Length: 279
Image 1: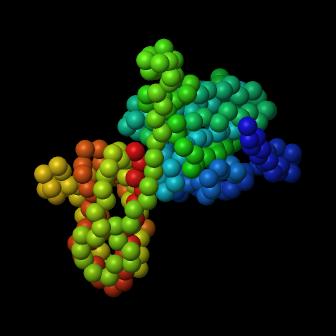
Image 2: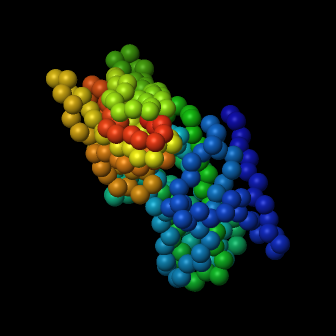
């Protein structure tokens, strides 16, 4: 088993400091930069009042890199509780892991493997107001998400998931990349993505075009083009098309046969549209 170690730099008083600056302007979203994250990033250092809670915005783990696991650290001069929560819809949340944080002790959760689409860190302060508080997260990506009948290893019921000969039924999620448009200079449908059992799709749109519009389509079993709605990853707005660039959009593509990212119009440059599908 591989052991992962993390070192936090200390400030002048000897307390753990931040590896990276707080990015509140970016909705505290973190994208891993390698298959296994070796850095931690501060989410907040704002002291909490008695019984006050901090909740990270829901993070879509089908981002630019598929996030498979997370880990958190918290330090406070008053005791509290750190939670890792998950959601299928970024609305109703359930607790996946929780750890009690003692006053004056930098406390870490275990690595938590995620099974739902959205995750967040939440910290609930105790009955005394804080003077010092800092919360970090680290994320891991690129690992195979192995499940048994749709459940994570900790949720396996061996009796109900055995085959007739006693073996476990195991399924593994697959991901694959696809290029809809590469430096396109003119309008057009581009390449059609064969869904082939994929359930989710993340699409990135970028380029030098001064103006452009991309419409989102799914092809049904009859071959008809139907509008599909995407969710913009940075602010959770939904739409059937976009005029923007340097954006990422998440889609539920279950049941479609093909997906098309049509460039309806483009002027003054090029546009690329690429995606990652997840089964």
